[in-house]
Figure 1 (spheres, helix red, strand yellow):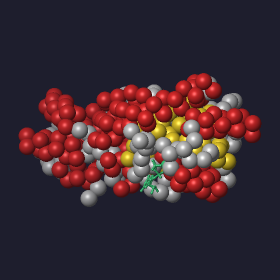
Figure 2 (cartoon, rainbow, N blue to C red; figure 1 turned 45 degrees about the horizontal axis):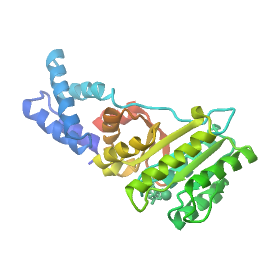
Figure 3 (cartoon, rainbow, N blue to C red; figure 1 turned 30 degrees about the horizontal axis):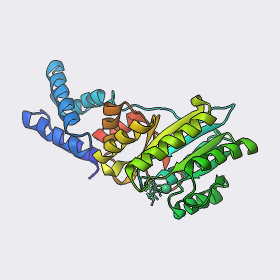
Length: 290
Ligand SMILES: Nc1nc2c(ncn2[C@@H]2O[C@H](COP(=O)(O)OP(=O)(O)OP(=O)(O)O)[C@@H](O)[C@H]2O)c(=O)[nH]1
Ligand SMILES: [Mg+2]
């Protein structure tokens, strides 16, 4: 059963009783809000329902939507005209960074936001990562700038930016490694790449997206904490939303760290990406709407 349907079923009653609130808090924890957030939002909801005289489950879900909407924060990330834009994708291994790099290239070419994209193979840790990005480049007709495995990822980004400028591209999408020998190495590497890009790019055209896997629950919150301690994160990409559709962790990340969500991915095909739509997202999460 989809998460939203479980909420709908739980709050299906005519009159919401005391034990229902506890069950709701438990279910919201399963939806990846985390215990403290779930408890506090249910307390708020209880108070609001008492104050406004809300009694039915349907009304309660609507009121809950209102409370959660403070944390369903969208951000619009798109290349802007008149200069070179850089979008760097960050995240731990396996979350979908490489796939999302390719999806975004196609998405922005298709909607006219970019005339010419360069993909940068900033994951130099694994040889297969470079081949994977090259394959996407071939399929999409997009230039891929890469060096051999083990080379300096900052140098790859530097090259990609030079190359993009030389061929008149307006967008560099940089894939990065999700894995290093140690977590400390990974963070250092990111800080270094970030400095290189920041020194070559117009800050208004440089965006860092953190990719998180919706199926990993509260782990994604911890990842967001460590990445945002190293570099400024402009927005989230919530991937694998198709296989979970709980996705409450995006709300938890916004509440805890103030990071908004830019895109949601719900499948493995290039087209399976779209801008984060808070209204639709909350309706799905709470089993509202159709
Ligand atoms: N169902 C589903 N699968 C996805 C989605 N995004 C990515 N995947 C799959 O997740 C797997 C990992 O994706 P990658 O793009 O290689 O992830 P990565 O973050 O680059 O991984 P590393 O390079 O190992 O750090 C692949 O099998 C993708 O097809 C999504 O939105 N939905
Ligand atoms: Mg990858």
